[in-house]
Amino acid sequence: MTGTLTRPTQTVTETEVFSCPEESHFYSHCLERLVFSQCTDARLIVEFGSGDGSPVINSLMRAASQIPEGSRCKDVIHGFELNPSAYDVAKSRVDQCELHDRYVLHNKSFFDAAPKDAHCLIANPPYIPAPDNQIRMPLLHGGFDGATLTNRLLTLNYPSVMVLVSSYSNPLGTLECAAEQGYVVTDFMVTPLQFGYYSSEPKVRNWIEKLRENGQAFYSDNIYFLAGVLFQHSSIASVDLTDELVQVMTAL
View 1 (tube, one colour):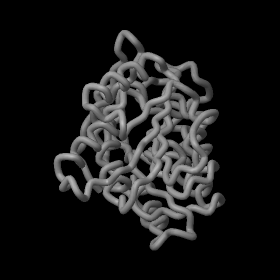
View 2 (cartoon, helix red, strand yellow):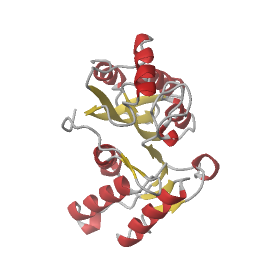
View 3 (cartoon, helix red, strand yellow):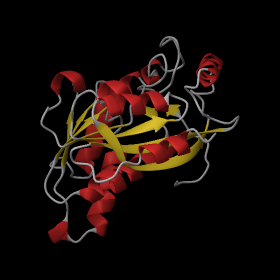
View 4 (tube, one colour):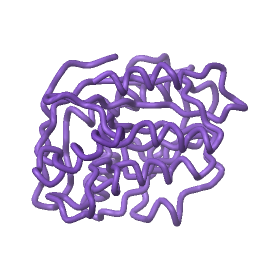
């Protein structure tokens, strides 16, 4: 487990670019430890939903300052973001940090345009569960149980997938989906978070309560767990930590 207990500071700018610094910070460190630190050669990585780009940018900048020049990983990340406002913000940040050769952004649908031959898929997909997307920020809707988009990403057959998984968004269903697709959990990081503005919306909290009654959500009155999970095809995995992740995600 990593991180400290914080209440997500979730905001939407005038251009409707979602921002949650605590979640972004955690995602960035998951990328750094679970993905970028494992680089032994140049790899093609694809990202579903780049948002404002800050998690990947921060990870690449930290890596550049900590690793000797001759041994720096040469991963190239292609990020896909449909929201034009978020894309513009991310593109501006990439250009400012001079990372355009490492982080290539596309204002296109990931499912329509992402390369199929990438080594790894990374994502912090929307995971707010609700019966429909008529919630405070519809773009955060993760489907009926919060895991719809996450599970869809696991069907795309990339060798490795690193995604954030919430303990109140049917994590057991996601692990079952991963197993059906031939994946095992080879590493993970977990942090506790307090319910924020969007997850505390009465419509959402009432729905999450129903998921808990059905054994699909795990949380206390104050916190839930957010995990960065590295899935790998069993043919390339050296360890299977699925049982350990289940124990952590269902502990509340």
